[in-house]
Amino acid sequence: MTGPVPQAADAFVRQHGYAPTGVWSAPGRVNLIGEHTDYNEGLALPIALPHRAAVATAPRADGLLSVATVNWCTDVAGSGGRSWLLTSPPVAVADLAPGVREGWATYPLGVAWVLRDAAAAGPVLTAGGGADLVIASDVPIGAGLSSSHAVQCATALALLGLAGHEPGKPDSPPLAEVARWVQLAENEFAGVPTGLLDQTASLCCQASHALLLDVRAGSIEQIPFAPMDDGLRLLAIDTQTRHSLGHSAYRERRAGCEAAAAALGVTALRDVPTSWFDDAGEEQSRLEDVDPAHRPLVRHVVTENDRVTRTVRALRAGRLDEIGPLLTASHESLRCDYRVSCTELDVAVEAALGAGALGARMTGGGFGGSAIALVDSNRTDEVRHAVDAAYSERGWRSARVFEVEPSAGAGRDR
Ligand code: GLA
Image (cartoon, rainbow, N blue to C red; front, side, top):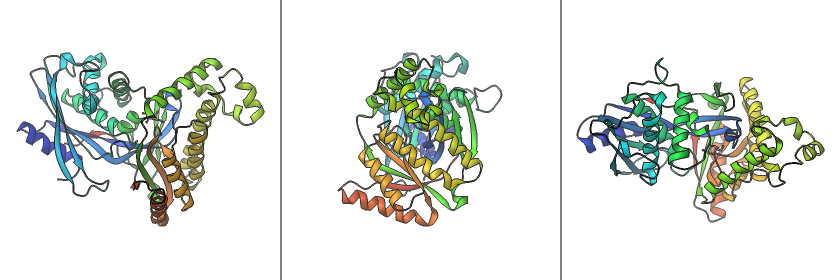
């Protein structure tokens, strides 16, 4: 059986000896543009990947929650491989609390913990009830493509589904609310202070669309985006590197933005007007009160929000080729001002641009993970080869390059 949905269902039967009540799945994401803007109450424009995490589940009546995950080795194209089941000892629903488990199990258990206590979710998980969960995923792990958020979002829908909730139905919690619960699980249970981008993308994206997320307004909008129809392709370039600096640097950047907003007397950097950056002299005087180390952070956030707006305008006008330079400018801003890129990402971006990509940038939090490149359909091989050559020249493990099509968000599969 191929694909995470049949894999999760099949593994569930093997593990528990009966069929799951249902299977829910949620995708990973790439962010087209709008990076490190979500926790500044700004704008982002992600798409969902075709790669998904699936959760097969059934209720149990002994107050326990069991989680297991199918691990498998395969390539991104999904061919062949070997699989085995990793299980985590069952936990009493009543005992769910941060720190109760470590590693991969924190993702599904954190979501269960939030849902147990979220009054607005109704009685999803009670001390007397419980559930068995079996997870399977083909979202590349550690590639900055939100594999953990895919697991969390699929878990949230699965547990809500067992309680009779179906997002979109009148009495069920809206997906935006589910995204906030998943964020809470990530922040409080897994202890990572991330924003709302990844969860919202995984839950709310639609096929052939990018999702315009406005964090301050709490709104989402579907923006048609089907590069294939315009003779283009979006490539993801997984550098297969992740620098350990990532989490602490994320916290530092976030704290830097908050300090800059406080120094400027605004609620969030979202409030700083783009016009401050039109002229260097004006920028200098306006940012006088901000710690000099934080000024480039402000410039990145403000100009990045503007690039999202311009990207959306170009997409709405059907001028896809115009977004290339905006993607590349975003990378430069993340590299020079926000300083969250790394050599492997820069080399991937340079190689793609050198081989004729219309635009390229790192995507996600940075310090490794993946880049994206918007490429003419007949240039994809050239870009692949250029990235390969650049990596092998430096003696690096090769990057994994694959096409991504804007795909569907989370939902019930069985
Ligand atoms: C990570 C976080 C997101 C967002 C991005 C950067 O993916 O999980 O909330 O901040 O980094 O845009």
